[in-house]
Image 1: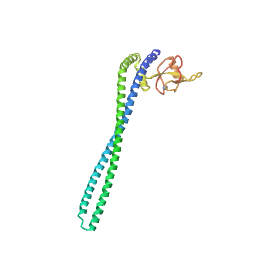
Image 2: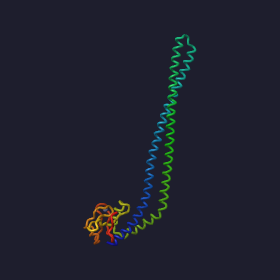
Image 3: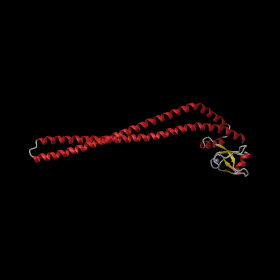
Image 4: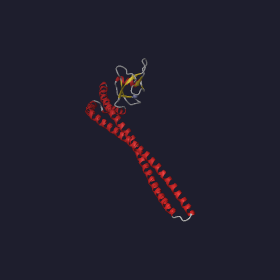
Length: 247
Ligand SMILES: [Zn+2]
């Protein structure tokens, strides 16, 4: 039993180192994911701005056409004015002309307003595009970091993986699969020492999750009959020469 615990210790040592390498990698991958989510939002904003700008431009085109029509009407009325035969006719044409002129001025100022609004929209879109460029840069640089990290640690990872296989060879399959299952859940920590939680009383806890370990389990561990695991977190338990402390 002591031999098995020692073999598990060696395996755990390797697992913890592998988990550290994996953890670094996962942290970088998570950062890429977060930035990519932000990128999607920025792209949505750009798309929305494009739709708005397009719609505003359509309104500008329509209003400009409308203004041209009014201008033509004004020109026609001017011509008619010069040909008016009576004062009454002249006054009527003048009234119509002035109305068209006022309408035309209104449309022109509306066009100007629309153009101003569209310029603001375009400026906003440009800023958002800058944001997009920045975030794309950031994603590219984290990807580079991740690649570099993978490259730098590859040899170490391969060494550890080989060592893991060597360590696993000396462990019976049932104990190994138990350990592996738990180690996967707890970043490589498949085994923890039992902690004594009271100096005078025989009270023990799992130093992985701090939950109570029964005396029955502790005495079984002391006699080294069989592997025992924490009923709560599942980590395999062992007794240290110096009783372990809670974390
Ligand atoms: Zn536990």
